[in-house]
Length: 140
Image (cartoon, rainbow, N blue to C red; front, side):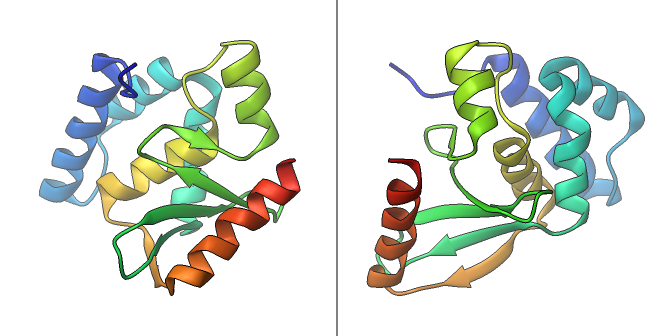
């Protein structure tokens, strides 16, 4: 199965990126679209972007994951390639109940990418493996 967002969501994120590159802000109509498409995750995700809570973690081999410091102070690992977050809200609201496309953390990752607001952290292969395994142990 293809792990892409619905076309309307992909297009909206592209428009946000384009607008931000041209004007350094997101117009109101796109913010309304964000709220319409992503529902209650939109505003908290924008808050996370404003707080620069998203970090892109990269290893020398090119493996990448994102860490988002949630509003609760907990660090969540997000995988943009498969639209997955380790937070409880993602498991419940997105996977179990199918009430939302994404949680606020993964949406914050996409918005940070669009707005160039990701922190960058280079780590060794071993460090990235430890980050990924720590999440697995926490969740399992």
